[in-house]
Image (cartoon, rainbow, N blue to C red):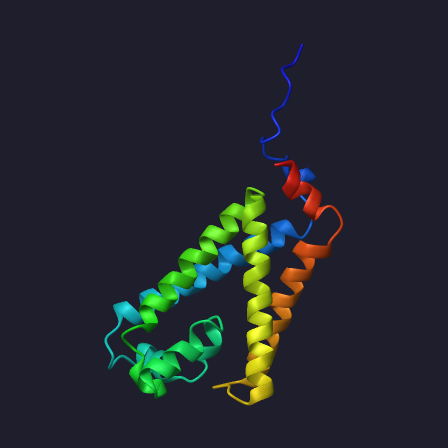
Length: 169
């Protein structure tokens, strides 16, 4: 006679709902990209062409979540003076993305709500900034970011079986 399976046992891979795996991998890849950007910024001197272009390029604001971009502009003013805090911002985004991917992979029900809240806040903040005309950089990249976050939110909120999978664990 087999012992009963505890309710907290992780679901087998084939029982995991479809959107959870790609979303978790998205966060793993995002963490890797931000960690590599951090290494490029810290490893190369300012005179090096790659890090210099990365630091001075306006689209670096589009890489960061909407939480950091207005804060950096408000605190440091011009785009050229945020070099001191940009590595810390990249590191925090990389750590959050790695943690979110890992906990989504484990079907942690609280991380589902945290990721949904972060995605909804990103979409609302981006749309408000676009409507107010207070954006720095490429508007199309901001729209793509908002659409990706809306897709993640919708998948975790409304895809059939996702809520039940997170509640079973």
